[in-house]
Length: 124
Image (cartoon, rainbow, N blue to C red; front, top):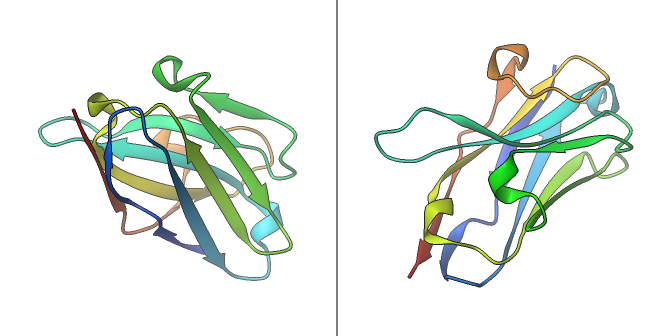
């Protein structure tokens, strides 16, 4: 099993960019699909982006398509979320998660390992 650890959050102005990183311990990282979720205050956790084990397939929630890009480097056991053109509505705690499947996974219950989260705040 892998254990994700997120980094790269922070405060940015609207229109700015951030890159989140998620390092996952464990020698079987390449056997896991990975995903990013977020949770804003008073709201439920929601899917943001996901990537298959080999990086060939990705999925995004509609509101981030064209602005966010998920990628992974299996040699470094790391998955990334490049976030451009950030909006105040993107403000949330962002979580990285691992799913013991090969394909793209968009539902939280299919992930069995979660990081502690990293705060992203976008000011208007």
